[in-house]
Length: 610
Image (cartoon, rainbow, N blue to C red; front, side, top):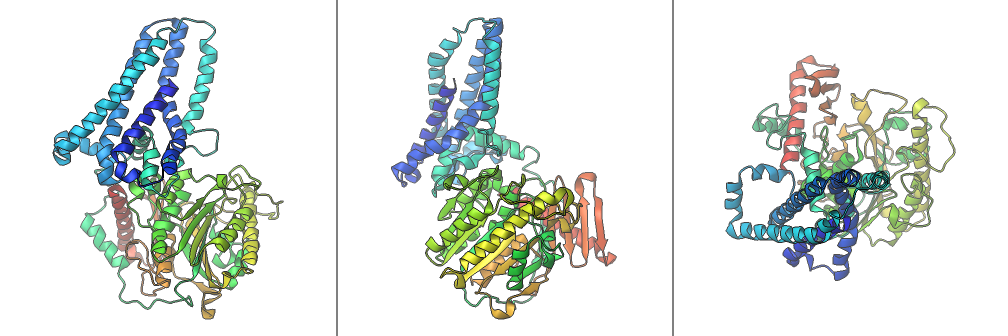
């Protein structure tokens, strides 16, 4: 039965491949064949979801001997085969138009079938119906001939059912999450190629569609749950917030084509660094870099999860209270990417991570961003591994290796790992303070030590003097200095520019303007003389005429909004209950509230429309 389902999924893929032959067969045969290999784990996960009910029914059939259960299984599979055929048949032309597989967004169109047919046209509709009937017909024919005939031979047995149920339930449970690894499977598992067409072809349509429903079932795609004002009014408020009277940008680099190395620091809070109003003695190596770099002391993360931070750093898209745009392939493909900006400028690009990128669908998002090189834990060998992957010191060594191998100019990046729980870094405990957060403090100290060695080794390389190093956290973390998750300080993170390409007069500068993680795109691209207008949420905060404000959402329905000297945290889920309300000028309260609500409303409107 499992083999039958897997073969049926293979049929679905073959239909997709030959329907989109003009796209698929531009790739090499080896790449095309590899899609079936990379598809297998997600196919098995989808199979496990389908097999849950049949496993229980076969247990009852063998225990009781009532043939009724066989009939239920038979018609259950008829429904499943038809359902999958409808999904895969309907998405054939949809992919040509949307560049995405069938998803939750399509459901609202299906509520008006006449409009769908008229829009699609007779030819497209007939072709879709043909492939639906073709797949369903083959599936039902083979099920009846090779599966159902064997089901009818299942006899009553008092011993067999219970071991069968235990073993089958265990296998189904493992299959649901895609294996025994710590992070459950998602669409990212299928992404392996620079060709998005191959990645989409490898993605299981049934799994993708059901996951899209799950991801969006809590929201009405026709209605913004954060609709406080008319769209025109909210957009007018935002226009005033982003308005710039003139551009007198501070240009801190001595040339516009340096190499760029981006280090995304897992869970680093500003509380770990003395120069950002944090504790001392935890990150001595990083603080040495601050003494000779350009430090943004008032930087705030966009969200509180890694996938939210990735969308903010790479695409300059702010976080939403509960959802993550990069967890949904049909949405993240509409986002801009600084990777593309660098590639258009002639840069070699790479991204490396010591763990599993499937978390939060980061892997799929990264492959879509078209890096020249993407490596994760399984792509490295010979290194010791912790529970989550390869410790940071070794990935920093790989980054230096990648820098030396890359054609210049390069834009190489890594995402650190060791400062994520369970904090099993290969280092004896050094930091004795911190209480419950002591393991976290020690993990940050370990990564800091790795940074020190990384920079020391980089200084010996010929590319060092023409390289800009950027360190920024993906999000903050609770620390021993504060526990309130509803204040802006909980989202306070470090962002540092470092390197010999920084003009001498700007080295050691502590830049105190309030910025956000997603401002990195405009700041960096402007320094390189590259266009950044497509990153509409990103501000070039090295232009003193940009207004200072920060927005930080939290789950399930709250957000923090701040301007210099003013901050409030409001929980919309509780009917507008304030957690904090630090307003120095109370006459500004209505305007501040309107700005924060308008920001959230417009971010979520764009999230829904993507």
